[in-house]
Amino acid sequence: MKLANALAERAYLNAHLSELRSRLEHNARYQEGETTAEDPYALLADMDQTLNKLEQLIAKINLVNSTTVKDGKTLTELLAKRDCLSLRLMTLKKFLDIASSKINRYSKTEIPIRSSVSVKDLQKEVDKYSMELRQLDETIQELNWTTEF
Image 1 (cartoon, helix red, strand yellow):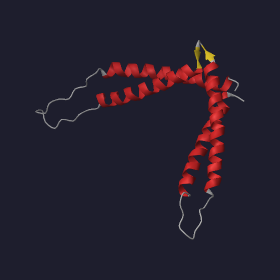
Image 2 (image 1 turned 180 degrees about the vertical axis):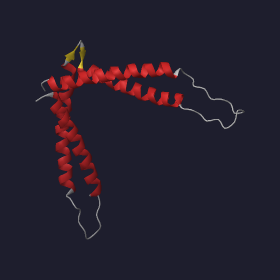
Image 3 (image 1 turned 90 degrees about the horizontal axis):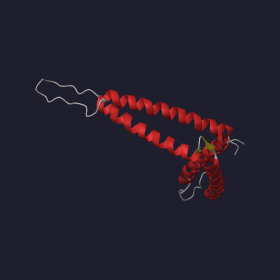
């Protein structure tokens, strides 16, 4: 099995847990004289079993990520870098959107609003980080599909 398959399994288990939480909430109470649509104890048992599988899978994924190396960096380091690049880009794009928005003045007596940064320079920086993130994501995806689990 490849690492990508294990990641897909982790996503499935997380989605299944989310579904179980919802089903448990819908079967937490019932009206006297009625019954629940599903047995909450069976749902709780399914949750326990799913969580045990997920715990083992996450531990194995983390172990593989920490021992898989590309260009002197572990996959764990590459993932951390990708997460931080994504956060940086999200913040810069939002800031750039605000800094570059036009403020309509209704008369010449209103005080003009100016951008606090060079929008052009900041856009170049955003473009550079975007390209770096795309390349990093390609590297991570390649490792996911080539690394044995």
